[in-house]
Amino acid sequence: MKVAGGCHCGAVRFRAQVPETVEVLDCNCSICDKTGFVHLIVPHSDFVLEGEDAALASYRFGTGAAEHLFCKTCGIKSFYQPRSHPDAWSVNLRCLDPGHGLAARVRAFDGRNWEAARSALE
Image 1 (spheres, rainbow, N blue to C red):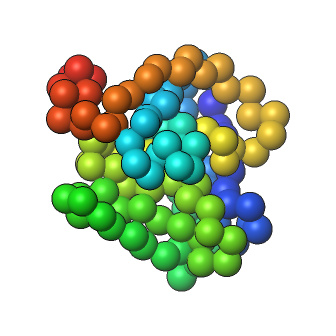
Image 2: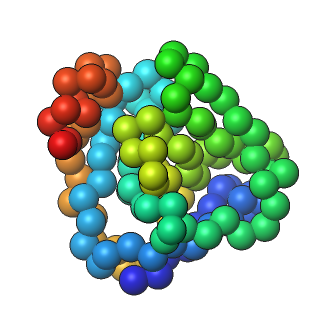
């Protein structure tokens, strides 16, 4: 099914192709815990950024492997490049447009203990 979403102000918009039923990850790492990010993993090939990359700011911390992308205007991180899935984007389920119709099953991800949690996903 097709879904769309973006940031609060609308400067960042995307669309993606996803299954009708998905598993999303609720992570407790330092950044996800503070922002309430719920991860919907979308392969790069199934994701389209609409508009300009210029609307995005980048932030890296820790290992620097993940690239956190934020709207320069409103500060919302609607998607980013996670280190756990280098061939996919992590889309914030909460940033999908209302009425998307996606059935999501939430799974806890212990991002505070990232290495062990990542191994459990494999």
